[in-house]
Length: 444
Image 1 (spheres, rainbow, N blue to C red):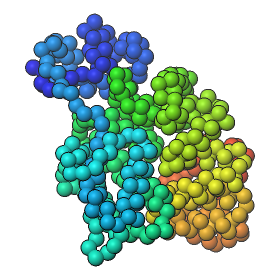
Image 2 (spheres, rainbow, N blue to C red; image 1 turned 60 degrees about the vertical axis):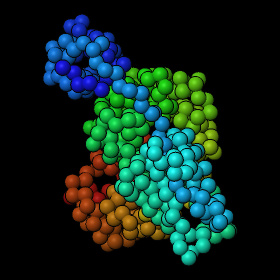
Image 3 (cartoon, rainbow, N blue to C red; image 1 turned 180 degrees about the vertical axis):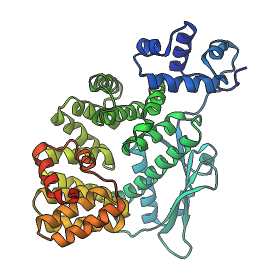
Image 4 (cartoon, rainbow, N blue to C red; image 1 turned 45 degrees about the vertical axis):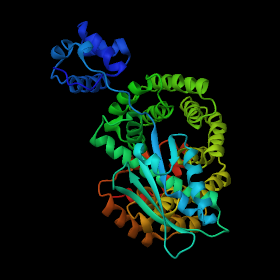
């Protein structure tokens, strides 16, 4: 008997209906215009939900006898606790409000204040003033109503601080922690509600890491979620990004998936034209059809509304570089580096900054920037290779050989084809010049 309390998605019901008509997997692929792997993933989930082991058992289950799931809260609630304790410290209170304002810019969360808000909270942010230290307080991020601390950091505030900037930095840190925590949670429990949040977090993390093994699972889940009547726009946004990564990595038929991006992007702009997520989908669609100039206005509008959007900034920097607008690319990087503190910011912004210096022939500045990256991330592939290229350009061949030895200690099986893949998308003359500058890396 099917396990009570679980239900099939609309797509899973479609597939079950086709199973009852006797269609094979190949015929289901054709009927629904989905891949064989997607069908397999759906079937596995159907068997799990219905508590059966094969298609014969699945078609015999009477869905009308199954209990429907109770309605679930589809919002992500963030409760800010004890903010009133900062009322006597105006600068600290101003920073606290700036953090909330910056988190609200993502348009993904329901943010509430006070002890009453904690009962339904997906995450809690607790404020703890430090005794005998005016305008100093701890910000601690908790998972749900548990004692699990995801992050904690002291904030010391001065009247002359740029509260908007610091608030954005803290909000970005909280956002990244929520994202990665949700992705880990999804890997452990794919049924946890709201599924859109955990599934999109998982998908974004995997696609940013170019993870082919997870692509079919991601698409299967997100396509199903995107069909829901009240699906948050973050679902098709994430799906479009997964499609685009798959196209650029040659995992899928480009023509078919560009059409999918177009459909989702146009629907998003019809329904939510002022959403940064709809605008991002249109930017991706323009890049997918080769209209890079058409993507730029959307990306600039996103950064005007959501300056902490790392993905949009990174793409816009690349487009400026490809167009030869190196000064503008550097300006965007310098602006973005203000928002991310610590070693993560060094890696995120310094490597492309060094790349621009290299293309401009500023090899000393390039080397200085790369040394900062390698201090925190000595295993960084591109940073080490660019440092080798810098030394080759400056005639420091002994130093170059030293870095080649270190490089292969971290990446013993690295080949020229791997570097060509990293440089994929860079215009041919520039790409060939870069490959030539590290030719001694691949000499036997």
